Amino acid sequence: MMLENKKIVFEKPWEARLKSEPLDDGSPVPGHVIVKKRYSLISAGTELACLSGGESWFRMPGVPGYCCVAEIVKAAPDVKDFAPGDTVFCYGNHSLYEVLPREGIFLHVPPGIDPKWVPFVRMASIAATAIRASDIEWGDTAAVTGQGLVGNMAMQLAKLQGAAVIAVDVIDSRLAISRTCGADLVINSAREDAAGEIRRFTDGAMVSTMIDATGVPAVAARAAEWVGQNGELVFLGSPRGTYVADFTPFFNRVHLAPFNVILKGAHEWRYPVNRTPFVKHSLERNSRLIMDLIFRKKLSVEPLLSEIVSPSDCFDVYNNIRNYKDRYMGVLFEWK
Image (cartoon, rainbow, N blue to C red; front, side, top):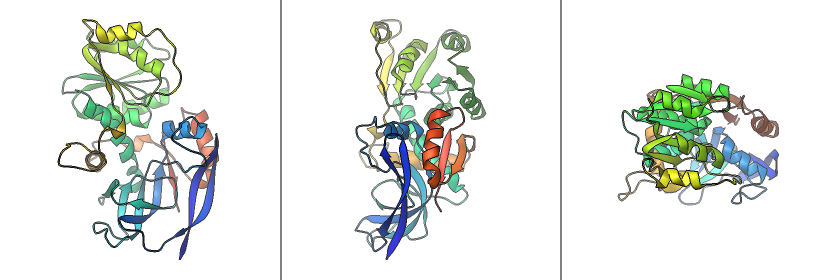
């Protein structure tokens, strides 16, 4: 028997289409399951980079997508811990159905969590990498540049570590959401003296941890000036675009006393996917912990949801996210 599958396809730069194709719903190959999506979340930074044609690893035509909440339709006989009808969080693309390996990220969704919030676990897991890589402790001051989904989550998680948190962006609507989610100070760096505001807030000490979630090299280079003595600059957003500058002042912040700024990378895939006896942290463990934070309402997700849209509107949706960044934060495709 065949299922009518629907999926979003990036056919060429700036052209997204919803396409249909049959999917065999027979018994999955060993170690795999068939899932039916309920909601999938757009990761604006990565997906717009893919849609632009600027990501070498994403080949067009291709199906984008990051994360979803789904229902198990069928499971291979050797998959014992999931059964048809189970609601799960998993990594998956923007499609109605998908065949996925069980060895990836699969978590049962506990009763009591609104399914709409579940896909946000992936974005918070990405943000958690910066927290894991950092030395943030209770009593520190941390700042996050870029208050999209990942930056906002990094700000919230830094606060849960016990730090006072500063949110920096150039879009007022995002900063308003950050304040709602617990930021102690918000700064619009397009019109405010960010260094001066941070100096005032920290009584001259500047921040102990600076997390860049923009992926814009010029922003990270500037943010190094906001880091205090022996502080750290954590690169959370993947750098994109050409940046030509005199980097000597930046390197001096790293090399010379009294600054001694420490540079750290925080790419999501620095940790293994599944738990092992040899490594404490994994994407699976981070996801479980984040799911629990959402369940206990320790992590704010509701303010981050801007819109729920139909996959059939994907062409307009991506163009709107690209052109009206002040209006869009978290956008879900609802699969019916």
